[in-house]
Structure formats: C-alpha cells, structure tokens
Image (cartoon, rainbow, N blue to C red; front, top):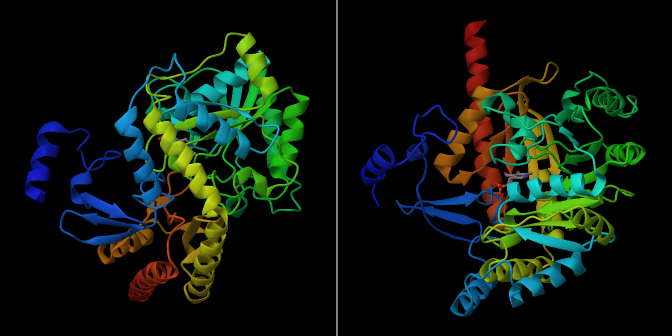
Length: 449
Ligand SMILES: Cc1ncc(COP(=O)(O)O)c(C=O)c1O
C-alpha cells in the first residue's frame, strides 16, 4: 500500500490523527509490512533493526518459527473456547508456568493484556488482605485501561484522565541518577523510602492492600532501583500487612538476564507477579501469578477475574511454546550476552561524547540518558530527537523515554535473538548519530559565544 492511500485511510477512518496528540502523526512513520527475527520491513521494502521488540511483544524475535508452528497447529483444532470450561492448551500452560515460577509463587490465572493483569492483581491483593489502598512508584507505568491501571501509571500524568481511581497514590521512585531528595546512594540510606512511607501512611484512606512496582521502571526512563531497595520496601510492607506486586511485563521471562526481574535482588519474594508482552510470543496473553495461600484467601472472599478471550487455546498454546523457548533456548543467557556487547559499545561512546550522561538497565532492557551538561544533568530532549530521527532514517528503531515530561532517554530493547552482527550495526548507527548531533551542538554553542 502506498503512502497516499495510507494517508487517505488515516484522514477518513482513524483517530487520533492530530500530529501533536499521543499516538498522532503515525502516518509519517514507517508502515510495517513484514518482520523476521530482529528486523521489520516497511511497505517501501526498507528494513529496520527493531530495537524496541515491537511493543515489547517480540522479545523472542519476530515470527519465531516455533511460535508460528504452535499457533498454526492449534488453530486448525481449537481457536476459541469458553472460559467456563477447561481446554487442553489452557491446562498445559498452567502447569508449564507453575513449574517455572519461583516458589512460593505457584498458581496462575490468564487474561489478555498487561493492563488486565494489573487490574486483576490489584483486586487480588485487595480481596486477599481486606485492604484497599495501593501505592506505586511515581514514575512507574502499569497500563492504559481508563480507570485503575492509568491511575497507577504515574509516569503518564494522571491529569490526562477524567477520573482517577480512589485509594491509589504514589511514593517516590528510587531514581538515583536524579535523586528526588538530592541525596547520593548508599550514603542516603534509602531515605526516599522512609520519607515516602511516612507520607503514604498519612495519605492512606483505608487499610492498605499492596505496593505495585516494576523491577526496572521501563517507561519512566529505564530506572534500576539501588541494591537492597526492594528488600527494605518488602520489610516495610510486611509491617503493614501489605502485599508486594511486581509488574514483570517488561522485565519477565528472561529479558533482564534472569528469568524474572525481581530475582536480581536477594531475599525479595513477591506475593504476586504479572507477566505479559512476549509471554504470548507475539499474541496477547497475560497472567497473574501468586501463592496457593493468597489465591485461596482471595477466592474465599469472592475473587475472580477473566475475559472472554482470556483462555483461548490459541493464546495458551502460544504461551506454553514461548515459555519452552525461553527455557530451551536459554533466553536469559542470551539477554545477558547482548547486554555485555551493547554496554561495551555504549561505554566507548560515553568516553567520546559528553552528551551521554548515564547508561543503565539490565539484559535487553537498557537506557541511555542524554544530557547537555553532565554536571547539571540538563535533559538533551532536542538532541535526542535528532538522534532518533537519524537512526530511523538509517534503519534503527527504538523508543524515547524519560521522567517528568522529558524524553531524553534512548530505550534499547533488542529481541533476545539479535545476532552479534546486528548489534554491531545498531551500535554503529547510534554512534554516528551521536557524533553528528554532538558536532552540531558544539558548532551551535561556539557560534553563540
Ligand atoms: C510495565 C508495564 N505494565 C503494564 C503494561 C500494560 O500492558 P498492555 O499494553 O498489554 O495492557 C505496560 C505497557 O507497556 C507496561 O510497560
């Protein structure tokens, strides 16, 4: 399909199209026609390295042949089935996932999107504890459903929504590069947590139920909490009879170099985790996972969660195969290997270009924060936009993230099957972009002097 025809369809049949709106102006971006591995191809036949793994759903690689085979075989037999009856792929997925989960996590229920799973997780915690208040990190993001998950997505500006869910509030995210208290780790003794909980206690409108957080805050700018943060938080949650929910949408199933993102910190045992994104190998399926004891307690209090398509055999078969792939193709080790290569290239760039202020993340979830001044940490929003435009033109796709309205963090999420040669190519494009933009920025500041 050519661009003129695409534009016609957008103008007549789609919204939002206003360029400055979120998700507006898509007609000016590549229109995707096919994909394979780490590459997506647009309608002009141009190839791009997809260093955002689609919308994170292609972390196993686009069109993974085992996923395509599992889907093809299942759809010939049983595409859709009632969620009020069991079906074989559904049962097999519960068992496969249950065996993979670190104990005491054991039980699961399936939904469709990541947002669904977060809603269900919050409700699960409320039903299990009898409490109501749920707290999240102030630059966290947990979904786009119009009420509860957007209310908990503080990184997305709650003022964008007409109504916010009661009994949801934020605590400070432990963002050490831009400490909200102006302190330095470890001398700070994690003061942000102490201050936050003092405020949270004052703000609770009921008995508190849970904390929800990402092991790495992805959309907020790829923020990795400092060592021992989550352990200290869990101790505080226990004192308040609150449950700990980890949103593993972006960090689960191998992407950080371990099976689950929370496993990077010793001694943290979440009560509930959610998984989505590449769990379906490209199809939409999510899960809420918890312990037998919490599940029983919540169900006794009337808990249930489902969707019409939540247990479709097609989705469950894709889920089971994606877990098999993660284990049998050792995706955590691949992610760790990719991290080492990308970090080496980024460290060399940081040595060369002042624009790079910080490099962070784990596995195939990495962030590069750009600043115009390393001391002041001034966000290099305009420069990063130029870098992204150059890279897209040269065939490298990634997303921009940041905190407090800034978009100065290049988020790199290459699929876990990305080859060494593809990484080298991506890093070379990025390096050229940073070099050109740095040179232009230097030229502009000299001209101004
Ligand atoms: C950490 C996290 N949680 C939840 C979600 C929501 O997932 P979905 O878009 O599948 O509803 C997202 C989406 O990007 C996410 O990044």
